[in-house]
Length: 331
Image (cartoon, rainbow, N blue to C red; front, side, top):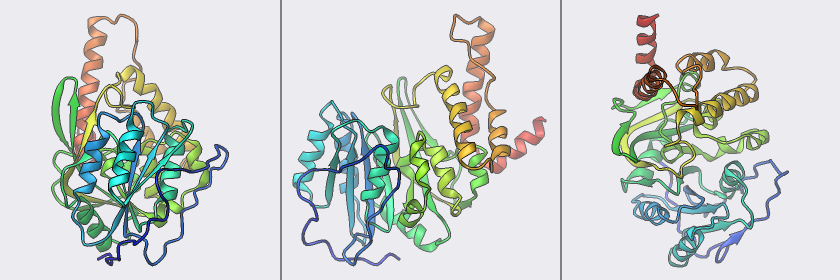
């Protein structure tokens, strides 16, 4: 069990903080842990989340744990009032530090500086448009990592809430017991429901190559890189909500938009990972349609596209071992 530490008597910084950050400085420098460092850091990542961020913050502040935790909010030059909400919360809650940026850094650099500012042994990520639904989220995930020191990070089940049209689904749907999974299994297909389900070891994040932050950070690929340092732990409780909305990076974009981007990212990360997971990535590629025509499609093409969307969605729920069995049956 993580040792409970005393609450910091004085904040190390006051008001909101703008950290100097160079686009060319790709090295991640985490602050050294000291005796009064919190056991857990919550990294809240925001960009134009004014409609959602208060709910995200409230879900962190309701956490009940037998250790101290800090909240580090990194805002990427939002233009919709997100920063004002963060600063208002900062005035009321001493464990919250808001790091602002005078320019838009992009998702990769914003994550980089956020991780660099965290001081806890573990780092729980929450994106500003998601929220946690259990007050024991931090306690459950930190206890899992304490019991499983080989794991580089852990994740848990999540409710996906689609707003257009309105629907909800649990992801992964049928995983109800703790598991230890491998990086090869993750490279064969993503089974993690977003950054907001993940809790990382701080030392593992510190060991990542600086060149990683020059790539476009997306949770599937980022987690493959992290899992090279140790297996992945699965906590079966449903502890958060992933909100799928039109402003999201992926969630409600058409397949014709996301598919080319997914294939580009596979190529970029395959090279970054020294082609170690070429076989797994190729296996995943074969589950995708070969191409999407943006022009007025025939009825046959529209049916084909709808079929693959449904198949990818269903397949993403299944455990990796089940998918392998099904693949053998249809080959």
